[in-house]
Figure (cartoon, rainbow, N blue to C red):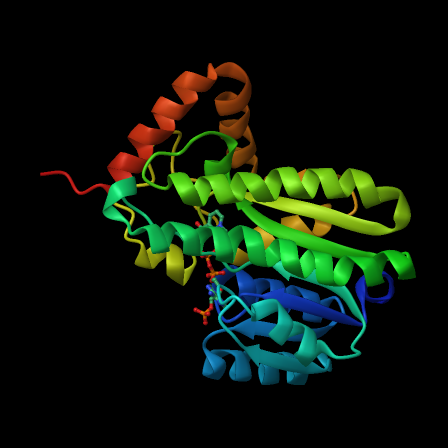
Amino acid sequence: MADRADFAARYGGWGIVAGASQGLGAAYAEELAARGLNLLLIARRGELLRSLASELSMKYGIETKIIVLDLSSADAVEQVAQAVNDLEIGMLVYNAAFSAIGPFLERSLDDHLKEIGTNALTPLKLIHLFAGQMLARGRGGIVLMSSLSAFQGSAYISTYAATKAFNIVLAEGLWEEWRERGVDVLVCVSGAVKTPNYVASEPERTGGLGDRTMNPDQVVHEALNALGKGPYVIPGRMNRMASFVMRHLLPRKSAVKFMGRVLKGMYVKQE
Ligand SMILES: NC(=O)c1ccc[n+]([C@@H]2O[C@H](COP(=O)([O-])OP(=O)(O)OC[C@H]3O[C@@H](n4cnc5c(N)ncnc54)[C@H](OP(=O)(O)O)[C@@H]3O)[C@@H](O)[C@H]2O)c1
């Protein structure tokens, strides 16, 4: 881990974790606190945020604030801007996501649009809000969460995977634009992670290439260690190998079909 003082000097004084109440988001909050950032934590469940915030400030001697907010709402970013006021935001982690699992037409249009809002529009707007100040200071970090499902079309989570592909391509472009101006952009392209959301989605089995399900703290640790070293990271050696096979050895059409079979096994109840 980078020295706490160096990390805080580069990405402090305050970090935002959007989607912080549990799982990967709470793990980001914990590791950023351990690395010395004050934290502004966002999610819908205020009780979880409050107890996490007080636990982290006791344990790491940092300042914390919470914003109880639905990041899919149209005015979410205005509400964040108001709550931030004049805090110096040096780090933005966008972790929240909505995933409408199932055959495309069995989910409402509203669900598909909510995926685009939560997973693509809101992170874009937050980056637009905070990156200018980071660039003016010549330092800062932005971390977006994506998924291995975004490297090709992924049946039964098509819109979710498309929003996650948006995050990969957006982060890569911004990494190149800003890497020589002191602002590090990273997309974390994760495989399955044992978060409450993942467990609640009741995957029947993890599908091909073995069970590579990781713990949130492992994923977050690899992601934050990769920040400033390149535009993306795939946490986990087995995930990197599986992704290499899918992207470089299989024809794209075969990768799409393979992913579809895996996801059907996980999420489409068989008669
Ligand atoms: N888990 C996996 O297997 C996996 C795999 C690949 C990629 N990822 C990516 O990793 C990220 C986190 O994954 P996860 O879903 O497993 O979740 P998680 O980190 O366990 O929880 C998601 C967090 O976001 C918050 N959140 C969700 N929707 C929100 C909204 N509309 N407004 C405000 N906060 C919201 C939730 O809190 P509240 O419910 O309290 O609002 C929660 O704190 C996502 O971007 C996901 O795409 C996960």
